[in-house]
Image (cartoon, rainbow, N blue to C red):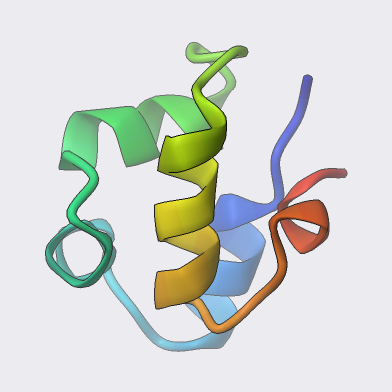
Length: 62
């Protein structure tokens, strides 16, 4: 599974740290999703990230 978190985050001008604070998801999880080292995560985590980025969860998938 690949995610578009980095692409969307950078388009919004946010650092991983800023997204972590805004979403309540730890930066290492965000980093892992962006790098591909984390392939599976919970719907709750994806929902928090999507909400922080003002996107739908489905927008996060490649």
